[in-house]
Structures are given as structure tokens and as C-alpha cells.
Image (cartoon, rainbow, N blue to C red):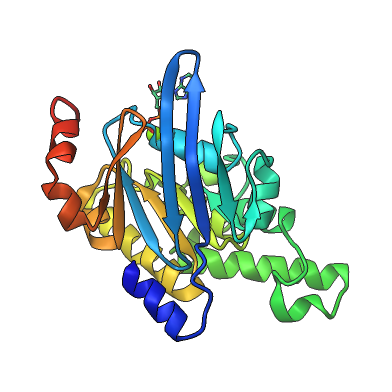
Length: 268
Ligand SMILES: Nc1ncnc2c1ncn2[C@@H]1O[C@H](COP(=O)(O)OP(=O)(O)O)[C@@H](O)[C@H]1O
Ligand SMILES: [Mg+2]
């Protein structure tokens, strides 16, 4: 990270983090699901978050993305304090997420799912060159084009006109990512994207996520139990236990850490 900052200064780019959360806490009636959590994420970085079940990973996602306001603490994204904003407004600002459980519109086609997301967050600049030409039909064509490109990129082109609910499980999971990307995010947050996938599908997913970062410059935060995915994909890893950040560093460093090993004993 130090190297990133130094080279950013050297190249005269802003070293400002894309996402900075400070002292984030979330209480549920006597249970502190998240305690004093801090995070800095830089543009284009891939951060992994691991921890036993119930350690607060999804709560952290909910707090950052506005689904569950923090009990205390601050979230700054792209230079703006977004704490307390509603989910839709946060998506508009550039954070897209997927959920641990599917939230697809199962009766709509794969293409309609992606188009609906693109439509909802269509804004000047998002559709690049076509937008300035104006006109409803052109915008719709641009949205369909963007959706199709994402379906293609995520290996879903052949399923475009099938009902989302009829897609194989692995394809449904990729469709959730395509839908998140359709909103044009600067940060993509994935909550257990490999859950239920086999080894081959997980490997494929790893490549797709890296491709999204390389192709779109999107930063990624990924929560996963699959340690192959975390180890191969993430430049940095945070470990949560009982709502607390207990370790942060490269995967090699955190997997050697005694506190991390302790946290996993008796779990999973
Ligand atoms: N809406 C809620 N109401 C009450 N307790 C919750 C709620 N959401 C999460 N929790 C509790 O907070 C803790 C952290 O949960 P979660 O963030 O889902 O963990 P993880 O994603 O790491 O498995 C758990 O003990 C869970 O039961
Ligand atoms: Mg979870």
C-alpha cells in the first residue's frame, strides 16, 4: 500500500482513498455486530474480507452500502461523506454490490435484469459517447448495448433471453455481478460470490472478477470463504472476528497470524 501511495504521489495523481470508513460500529439490541471498523481502499484495488460465520462481514457491507445505517462512524466515498445515505443514492454515487442470497428478478430474462439496473442508474456520462446525441431511443439502445456487453463479458450471452430463474446456478451468480456492473460502479462489493460454485466455476469467477477490475478499473471488495479465491485474487485481506478487525495484510501474512488461526478454531 505504501508503494501505491508513493507512486501515486510521484505520478502526481491523487493518493486519496476511494473508500475510507472510520470507526464504523453497528449494534443490534445488545449485540455489537461490528466494532470500530476502519478501512481504506484505493482505486482499482482488490480487497478480501474473511472471518468465521457471524463475524460481521455482511453487516459491514450493509453499513457501507446504506442497507443498514451504522450506529456510529463515518463512510467517505470518492471524497464525499455518504454515511446515512439511502442505498439507491449510494449506487448512484458509484458503489454496487451483490448479496449473499440471490436478488434477481427471476421471472425476467437475464438481459432484462441487467437492462433494468442500467436503466435505473442511467445518468449523464455513464453512457459515454452516445449520450450527448440525446433522444430516448438512442439512450435505450445504449442501455441495451451496455447490458449486452456485460452479459457477453460474464459468459452469459447465450442465456440473454432466458428467464433468470431458469439459468443454471453458476450463471445466476454471474448475472448478479453483471447487474451490479450495469450501474457503472467505481467500487464493486461481492458478498460470497463463489458460494455453491464448484472448483472449476470458482476459478472461472476469479478470472472474471480480475477482468472487471482490469477492464473497468473498478475497485473490488470480496467477502469469501474460499481461500483459493482470496489468496489468488486479493492484494490485501482483512480478517474479522466477532465484529472486530483482528488482522490486515497480504493473504500470506494473515494466514500465518496466530489471532487469525485462533479465530477459526472451532469454526467452519
Ligand atoms: N438484522 C439483524 N438483527 C440482529 N442481528 C443481526 C442482524 N444482522 C446480523 N446480525 C447478527 O450480527 C452478527 C454478524 O452477522 P453477519 O454480518 O451476517 O456475519 P457474517 O456475514 O460475517 O457471517 C451475527 O451474530 C448476526 O446474527
Ligand atoms: Mg455474511
